[in-house]
Image 1 (cartoon, rainbow, N blue to C red):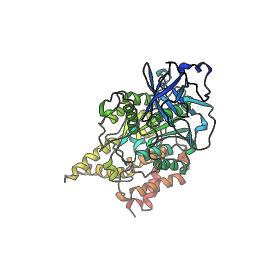
Image 2 (image 1 turned 90 degrees about the horizontal axis):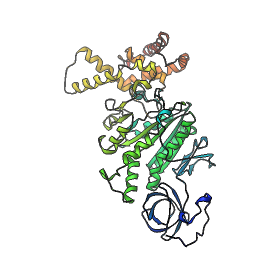
Image 3 (image 1 turned 60 degrees about the vertical axis):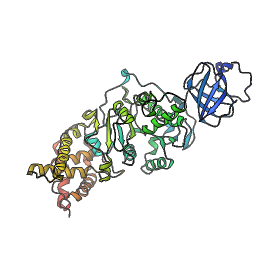
Image 4 (image 1 turned 30 degrees about the vertical axis):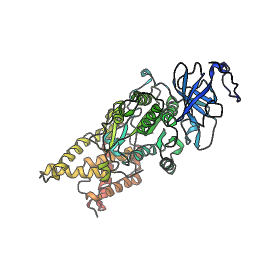
Length: 493
């Protein structure tokens, strides 16, 4: 149709867009979705500027009408609008470090700046010929992960579990452990309470890593379209650094809420619902996001830690199984272990890394080679003795060492171990230095050894974990264990 009404406002756009076929008029508005007629040659995902200042994104089109989801402002029937010829974009570059942004690029916390460059929030994943093998370890600082479920730069490792079992704490600790390393963090908060997001930002500031982290925040009170765009915006920021040859770790917290946001959006658009009322392309929505994580031939990488919430430990539900099939492994946090005081509450038996030892330092890979089987045997024997079973001496020894190993793998929030400390812990475990310790005192013994290694054996800092530990390094570590024994720690004194 021909639009006869003149626009009473001025929008700066490219000259070739100043044609009447790019003007439109709102004929209906409900639940944040404007039905617009007259927008000829409009494109899917194109941004639209409304007469009274509101903005929106085209999410559906048909031959006569366009359906625009508003991202800000109010829209009224009869209002004029203009297709901008642009797609949603996010500022990228080193200026965004230390900032808190929303998915539309607005600064929520930090100094405002003029972006030197912007990236579209939706970008295609890197082609196979630009990718490289995942073989560099991510130092998470969590012993249970680095020893048993190693993650490599460029990998996608899912974190899943019920509410309040430490998923967010685990993800924030991984970023905090990158302090001083040549790694950039991107934390995407999707549909979380403002108070919870503020606590995450505060933990980054307290631990002095905020200057190497970018926060992308879409609060629970934000429109569904803003929450839907959040992870894609975060991925675009991460891709900029990856293309510069930098290593990036990105956390999506969480994709369960992202799926709910997309379901809300598509139901309002009257798209046909599928299983659990999710749209038919929900798998594609997550796969095209997580495929953007990669390690490139230039040395840059994006390591993704998507978070997924389960209900009553059911990881066979629709969204969890989708994400498990997309990612390269998962860390399953068990509410039973969490309530028993084993934190992080990682269920070793149900967790896996499909990259495995290729993403471990050779020294740690060699030292931890039998640890998983030892813990599996411990779990079997522990279950057996629970029903009054009798054990022989060899089995009793496995049970005793396994019990102490579990205690040593417990780490409080922000209590992080360096890779060298983990290697030392494995040396002492393998040589039985904790076997005589009281179970309730074994963590104190280990902390004493850590302190001794840190203050009295500075030469260990130069140890290269890319090679198996030599005899001299092993001797120094065992000497630290003997010192702890002499001061009575091993006997619970």
